[in-house]
Amino acid sequence: MRTEDLHSLTGAYALHALPDDERDAFERHLPHCASCEQETREFAAATARLGLAATVVPAPALKDRVLHRVTTVRQVPPGGGTVDRALRVVPRGRGLARWALAACLAAAAGLGGTAVWQYERAQDAGERAAQAERRAETLAGVLAAPDAESRTARLAGGASGTLVVSERQDRAVFLASGMAEPPSGKVYQLWFDDHGTMRPAGLMDAGSTSQAVLLEGAVDGAAGVGVTVEPAGGSKQPTSDPVALLGMPA
Image (cartoon, rainbow, N blue to C red):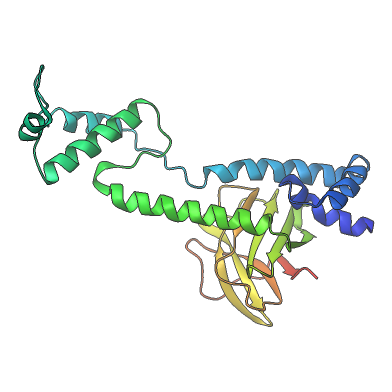
């Protein structure tokens, strides 16, 4: 394997996504290449953050609100009898569901759970968490796909970006390492280059210099991927020169 090809394997190696022969070749190369060693460390750190994708941090006042609501719900008196009697004491219908949800939230908040949702928005938050989990699974699936191909480019300020594409899944992931934070009120936006027409492909996390981003939408024959600096919230079309342009892996 050519040395230039080995330089492109840092992201896949950090994710344990290389076949045995490529992994062995890369590990022989790694001690003699400072840039690959640094990129591998940075990609490993970014990978560790993927597990936080579906985490929801509870509001500071959540525990007090939930515990207060629990005190307003009638409980079964000491020495309560049969299940039938318990059902007569505890409010029925919506009241029972509210009591059960409040009790579950209070227990989770007391134990320091990492996925506690506000009481009033539990259903919406649950759906958002499920979507985030599906997105993280899809991202991991692209990186570990048997047909995954990658291309790495050096960016300004010593940063690097790696584009990973699975042709079979028709999806792509952008791995960023050491990127400078965008200016205040700005965000990095990803684009599919449809042979001269730029198609929005999602936003990067403005507060993270190293991250893995699942591009929105299918690759659908795109010639490459670009990154621009856009107003917060993104743009329908690029409004600045690209800070990175990567052709699709061969």
